[in-house]
Image (cartoon, rainbow, N blue to C red; front, side):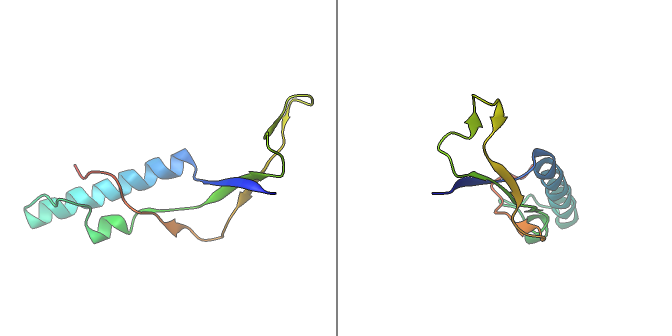
Length: 89
């Protein structure tokens, strides 16, 4: 039985959050009001490349051979939209 999780690179998440907040702040300033939620243009910035870490063993770390017993795989060639859960500033 294969086991795995979807992951994103931390640097990608930091970058898209910064871009979304920059767009949000610019639109807040242009509109003269602070939106309660992320505006659509800011949400469109929240796209990241998904990867998976997966393996066929229960334990992903092989203690005997001191190496990972899992595989790191890019899930798609395209970035995927993420739902914004960050509070606008």
